[in-house]
Image (cartoon, rainbow, N blue to C red; front, side, top):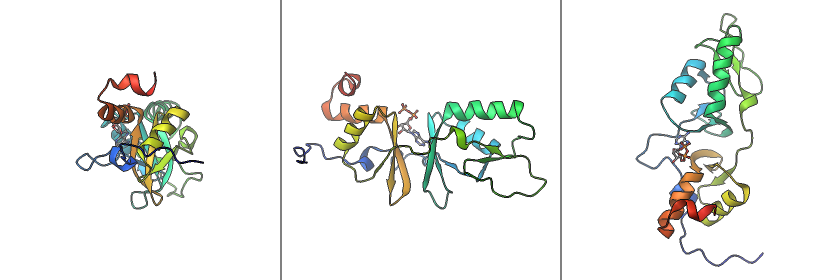
Length: 177
Ligand code: ADP
């Protein structure tokens, strides 16, 4: 394949992804390290549409992605209908629930609502390629990794803002018209 003409604006995914250096850290869930209460307070203290799920805080390898709406609905349903699910219950996104003390409250298993293969690019992926992927696959968001570690997220709006900055035009008119 012939390489395309050199892109005039050579930004990389790392330049466009959030969080920026001055922003609060990426809001992530861990695959089996948080309670129902902790997940609820994370979700309620932010307005993000979704949350990456990582192995653990120490090992931020990407496991999947969950939408805010699905999390809230599932937790709400489980609290109403699932015996033993309380604030202290462990939320489990991994395949097998970790062993817990016998008196621990029932875990809440949420692997079913997680996207197991969210789209990712690396931090050094050029933005013209990332924009192409968004357009062609109709992505809403994409995660950014470096050596398998999750670094950040790029949403469709972030892409539109980036394109508007380049073109200095109405963002809605560029990507999807
Ligand atoms: P949108 O970009 O459509 O407003 P969001 O509300 O999900 O979608 O995201 C708002 C901003 O926060 C975007 O700039 C996005 O990159 C960033 N963002 C999205 N999800 C997260 C997250 N889990 N942690 C930190 N920042 C996020």
